[in-house]
Length: 244
Image 1 (cartoon, one colour):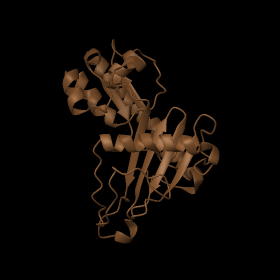
Image 2 (tube, rainbow, N blue to C red):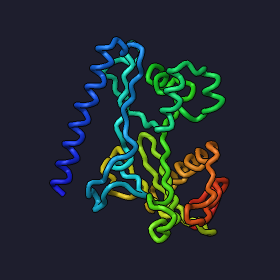
Image 3 (cartoon, rainbow, N blue to C red):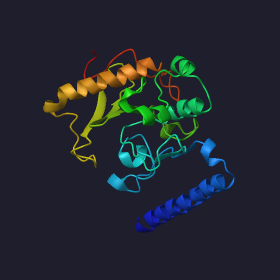
Image 4 (spheres, one colour):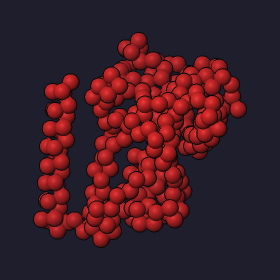
């Protein structure tokens, strides 16, 4: 494991160096002032944290929290740090806005995505400001011929500044789910699951409401897995052993 982590860190250092070359080239060609540069990753790697490797149907920060670096000279202040949760779906709106896509068209076609440049400039005053991020996982990475390794997994995550709710939905008729709830300010390493703690029932219900509301607004469709199993429709809100 030690050797694997050494290789991982070495890869990060190499990538950082190569990314710097891209920025230097833009500078040398006089293109930097008119170029929005975005650096991000699609996912992280557990590297045996919690006994897990690579990625999977879980939402621990080691897997789902990824770097997001942006450079836009004269528009984004150098060195500015943002601690708000954002989604990769926001990248499309950001690129379109930078390319001249109108605010009206963005609001019409991507009403639940944020233009991150406008958000950086305006903060919470930005009209499409969203104080949470949603993540979703369906099935494994295997093909349909390996159905045994392609179970009908449906899992979603809701994260705001304080809490993270992970929901592993039952695809059957009962609507049962297994879940995880973490106070990310008190427990950033996600060690204490509060999902079944009676003191956090109200918080869990509110987060679940917001998660389902986001899924419905974004017209999430769950027609089935690659193996053909059917998922529930998001018009129903599930809270464990029943439905609201």
